[in-house]
Length: 78
Image (cartoon, rainbow, N blue to C red; front, side, top):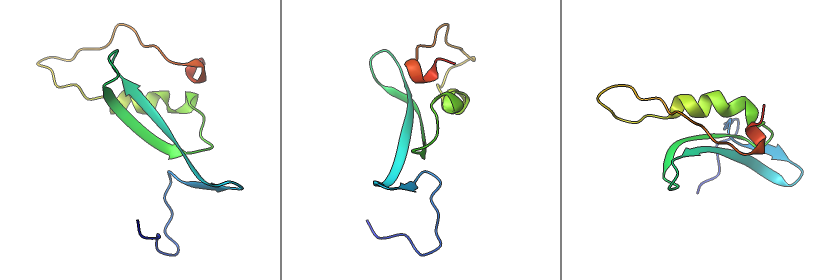
């Protein structure tokens, strides 16, 4: 992968003492198939990205279907 041009800023990467960090927020079905993916910098809290992840889900249907239940880990507790 080539180095980014000088002055180029990727919002999904953040420089910390250990290097560059990023965080993946993923929504998937019960079988582990991914539905939506949002990548942010490593300092972004999980609970602030719940809305973005839910809005990124696109399931082709004849009529809109909303899930009856959502299960998240302790990062999404609030």
